[in-house]
Image (cartoon, rainbow, N blue to C red; front, side, top):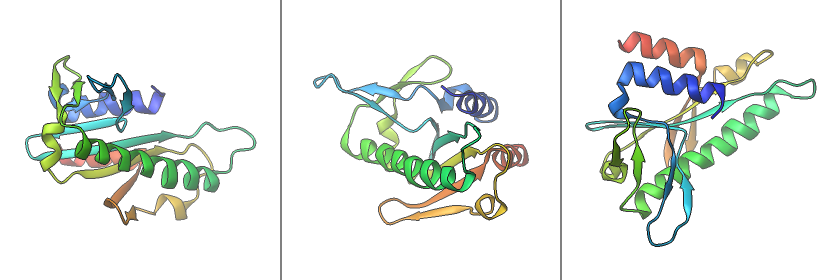
Length: 160
């Protein structure tokens, strides 16, 4: 778990409560023994389902923020959100432990239209044009919201 993933997990546990926040994202299918990975954080609160994929940029001298945004946020994170939605459709038993320590079958939430988010921490030197891109439209899963980590924090504070 990256620092940003841990930060979002704590933030979601405080804003949405530990009972409704799922940051342990690996699950196994009983008969197959295969292990799969959901999005980094899921919030399931009654008829609200948030699927959150989190990306953090490690800054080195050769990292270009535009390439990072395109590769990690717009490609890899989008694919991980799509995979999570696919798992909800395919598997009837996805047992995941919430942040309170209770194991629930979150595939029961598949009847809920999810709100899909990618939260990213780009570090220094991130362009405004990328920061102001607020969504990605996928032909398969529809609208995916893009949030700079600071914006996500302010939205949570505003909701409270």
